Image 1: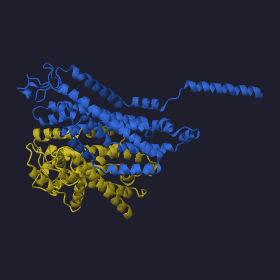
Image 2: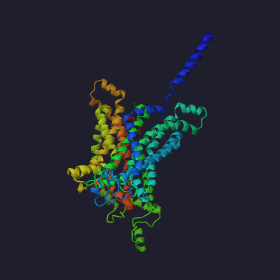
Image 3: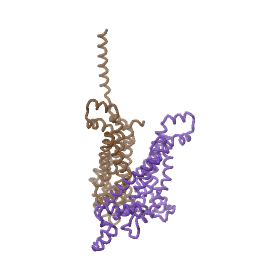
Image 4: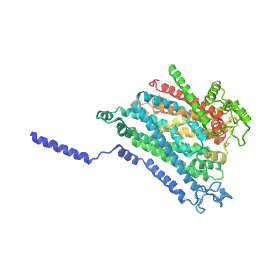
Length: 310
Length: 306
């Protein structure tokens, strides 16, 4: 009796083990990906964004002209001869100097999107480090670090960036760094909050009790949990940076000719809006489409990674 | 409460000093000065001018002279607009920025909240999708695209409104700048309100209120509105400062002569006095409205203690 019982339990245990293997566990990321894939707006945005990126990568090489080349054939009357047309090779038309707008839009897109990603990268690195240290260490360190953020919060950053850029020249790398440096405050706050709440969870305590070192705990257990929210936050930050760079360029404080960005093209287009609408239209469409995509992707990521809200 | 306000105001002093010091220092170490001309001026003249504006003193002395004057309401001379002091320039441009800002604020807050609440009440309906795509459009179209488009449609094509200028603030000159400022904030306020409202409407006490048979309007205004205000108010503080101090783009595109315009031209011309003055005013306003927002929290939600 006793013996058969024992065998049965063992069989049962084996069966259970088999079952566990049969339904392989889904990780948080697989779950999130499944949810993200169901979000139609986000998936369409990913496709559109990929299309735009492919455009700006190969665009300059399929354009008939380079971005700073003057087409002397249209200079005589750029608003008549420089209209968008397939036959002249100026698919998007030309500006008042006879420069090909298609090549310029593609070239400008590279810069605008790069600024977006680089700015987000700088902000994410500083913000995550600051927030996770502050949240994990706690105590005096935490309150000092948070006070610093409070002080920085009342600095009028848009004004500071304008000041910085006008005073130290329009170096494009400077713009990346300045934009990133002034916008890590929000992300640091969020990361600190999440770290703070994770720190008290049982699995961290368990890791402590089996003697895992602090650094490993942060790397293995805290950061992966923070990663989701950081991804959501940074995907919503990228369009902000693209817009900010365009804003600086619109004021003439961003990149300088012969380099170009969507902001510069829009600023030029805005001046000739009554005679050459295409100069405003094409760069604006690209800029707005990109911003749309990033916003939808950010929303999609938030829904996918933060299941609490459903 | 009083103690809290006092403490916050005390923290504000070192914060402002810090901001002033950083911007002062930035301008000090930056290459180029307001008196760099194509033709170098005689040494004596330069020395005299520099002595007049204390530019020959050590850095910290200059800074403390400036702070001393600032506390007496004297923002110093403008180096570039030589007939004006910075105080005069600010006094001139501040009403412009404030008018535009307050007007657009008064339009965007009620409109944005109304649209957000409508979308939240009809969650996942056609109306919701329509309003949210509209507001997403409003969020992603930058002011510098919107403003030229509005000018093309309403001034060039239809000829309803002037394309720019101020003319002492005649209403017809206000329409386009105010609309360009307001559309973006209507859109973002609507999005935030919708999110907050949906969270509130999911609470059990709202279900109870519905079960009691209260009307939707009553539930909305008496039960749901207040808790949903917190995230909206959090966003409004900085937004208010941004519009009141003048959206730089709107000022420049419409040539209204607001503070944003002076700031950018000041920075480009290295007009240190003007730039410092505006930076400090904006910083003070930011600190003040951050405090107002925190106090508003306690009024909206008495459970929040400060």
